[in-house]
Image (tube, rainbow, N blue to C red; front, side, top):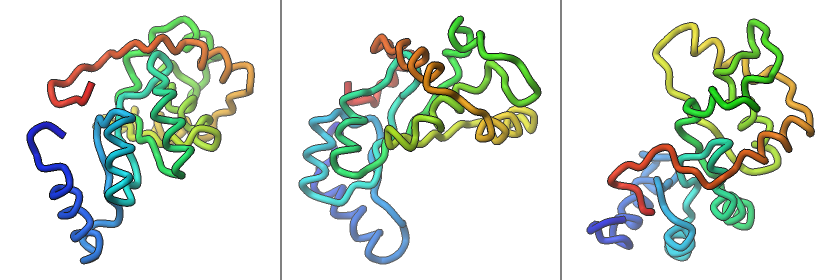
Length: 160
């Protein structure tokens, strides 16, 4: 939020939505308190934040569930060296590059979507193939147990 006039910014985003120039109003790196404030002013669709097995963002996810909104997750790849993630059986589609599957398995239960970034055709194919992986409840619990509130990315513009 910084120095930008909060309500004016949301009003401008709403106007763009009403004009059909954008489909949804979203936030990035907002804290739970800031999301609550934004929701009082506008029908915010999603809050994009760092979210991975080490940083489960439980408060933000709970808030998204409560208000029927989304958390959009970015930057999953630093966790791929974790032993819990590398214990998954290897196959052409099941690689340590796929904590994305953990996220997608959690989408239905946690209102989380992922936005993986890649320019490599091989990694893009791996990301798409991750959608076909099965992650059982034991695997989900084991991976969910990695949450330590550990932030791996700390951009200067983040709200925290």
